[in-house]
Length: 368
Ligand SMILES: Nc1nc2c(ncn2[C@@H]2O[C@H](COP(=O)(O)OP(=O)(O)OP(=O)(O)O)[C@@H](O)[C@H]2O)c(=O)[nH]1
Image 1 (cartoon, helix red, strand yellow):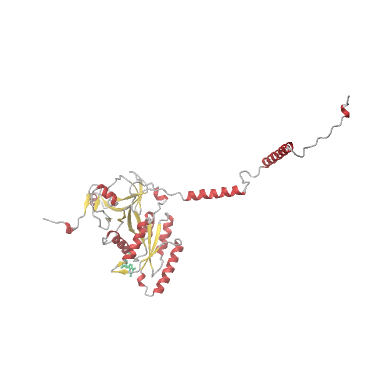
Image 2: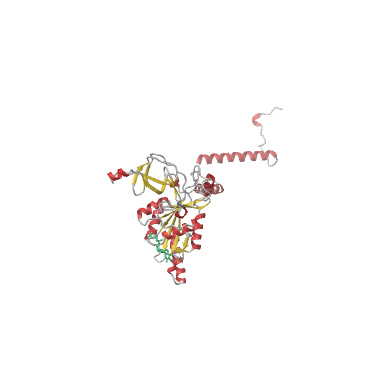
């Protein structure tokens, strides 16, 4: 039978209501929709690099904070090799507060030797791996500025009778300029308090004043008075112990610049030249431990309070106060050297550029 194409009426397409074909179609449709949404998003370009999920944002944020903290806590590497130079303990305070007496008491504790007077840096061995150099800070601003540059630990002496004085605040401000070293407070003249309650109150007040100046919990020691003209042994022992185990952080400026704390100097200008002209140019040799980094011949150096000079020469000398282990290794002496204070006139070995001097006590010398 012939059928006219135009007359033919087809059943309209019935979309599948169930079965595999229906699922396939559904998936296809969904995919198409997603793609068009993505296209739309790309076209809109929501803020470039911004997060779209809050979880991701939280993770990113905490990671950034962690990274920053890690950067802040990177240990500063002490690049010095060999034995570390002695740590410098600067004893600072207003006049007559007891600076010399404290240094003498500490030296007595560490070395069992009596120091007649405090002049220049005094080097001692305080432990197997540690040497300390005690310096009394002068009572003028220039002296304080110099001391602030080389101090690894500053002992701030405070007379309880007067409380904190100008000198202490001045010194604290100066310390801030040059990189803050460790700071400890020491209260003296506490024996002048007769009333125990008043003493306790004053201690509290001064402690809180000290904390507001430095930081909450800064260490403050008390020296309760004198026994036979010396501080109480137990208190000095505690203070010495604290200094011996203290951790010193290398300050970044200092580790990148060479500096020397001179513990002895010698004028080597020929005497005829000085006789001829008292104001002639002098040649002076300076002795001390080199800190920071290496120093070279010809370097320009600044001598505090004097001026700028260039170094005509530099030479390494044997350590006048070696650590016990090093002294033993070299097999020079059985007795460990514990003490070196050339300007105060103590110490039994003295190294010069071209000679070594040995001090022998008079009672040990026998003449025949
Ligand atoms: N009663 C009492 N006297 C003390 C105390 N501390 C120090 N002195 C005395 O204070 C005087 C001064 O002590 P020094 O050690 O010479 O003080 P200084 O700070 O070195 O003094 P200058 O170098 O002149 O600034 C000495 O006679 C000490 O005996 C203390 O806690 N109680």
